[in-house]
Amino acid sequence: MKHHVLEASGIDVRFGGVRALRDARIAVRPGEVCGLIGPNGAGKTTLFDVVSGIRRPDSGRVLLDGADITRRSTVWRARHGMRRTFQRQQLFGQLTVADHLLVAQEWRGGGGGLVADAVGAPGRRRRERARRARASEVLKECGLDGLADGSAGALPVGRARMVELARALADPPRLLLLDEPASGMTAAERAQLSAVVRHLADETGCAVLLVEHNVAFVMELCARVVVLDLGAVLAEGTPAEVRADPRVREAYLGLPARSTA
Image 1 (cartoon, rainbow, N blue to C red):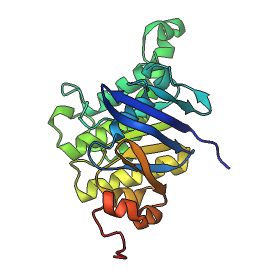
Image 2 (tube, rainbow, N blue to C red):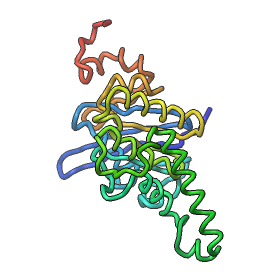
Image 3 (cartoon, rainbow, N blue to C red):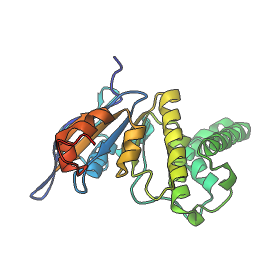
């Protein structure tokens, strides 16, 4: 059996007197696409914040490839292969689409600084060519190659979401966290997003965890679904199992518990 790339357990988070997460848990294996759904206020983004290191839990722990990273910084997690997108778009409007992917590879020192100075001008040129080749490859995979030189700030919402995904993929991830990636997308864009995520998981073994309000999209894309309600795990299993769970049907999907529709 494959080990878990991500395993979070016993997660409690309190905001004053409000218990946002109550013994929450989530685990994702290599090459698995797992969906996290639940009503507004269920604690989905808070759990994402704990996993990505933005928020430290009051109790519980987070493991990455079996190592306890609960107290590790967001930078450490990024350096060890964790990537994340956010509900609110986080693009630099003044940069081109291609620039976003080049910058995403720059943070490790790959395009300049002391590392490049040490190898000299030929090394810097080779590194730059490699960065641009990787950016072009990812842009093509995401259907953005025709937009490479355009301003990211001028893009419609759906295309901007794909740029955020492409930026997360520029430096290959080990674990990818997607927060509302399909928000604002057309049906064609959602299909393309689904194809990119599936290819990523199948071909590279990247573990993918996504939060998404579009339940139909989640059920089609994900092999496993976890449902949060009031900060705790209400149900988990395959899409078919989650759809059939009477607690989910009543609390989240809004369907009668005994209905077979």
